[in-house]
Amino acid sequence: METWKQDKTYAPGTVVLHKGEVYQKLDDNDQTEPDSIGGGWVELQNTNLQQYELIEASFNSYEQRKAQHQAAVKAAKASAEAKLAALGLTKEELQALGL
Image (cartoon, rainbow, N blue to C red; front, side, top):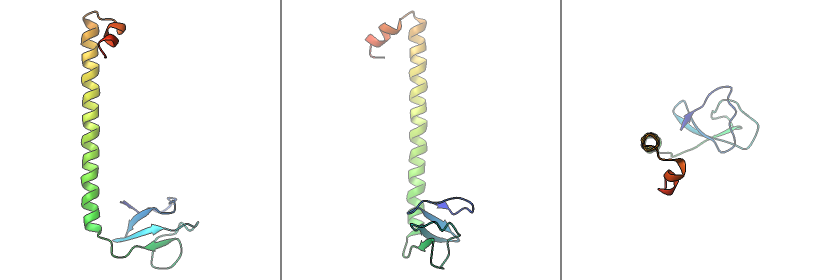
């Protein structure tokens, strides 16, 4: 969950953390700071912020591991293709092998 930032425009439905409280952007043009005064934002009650942050951290960790894995697979494929090309195989021959 992102922390509210001044001078940033928020779309309706966006949820932010501000001063330890969770707020959701209403469907209006009010981009003022989230607070208990009506307009612009509504404070979400009974949120389990700690559990949400744990889930978010786990998800972010997964996304990082996924990106690292995809980069490693891409590098390994490029390395293998370069080695096969160094052996004199043509692009058509590599395609015939499914590469």
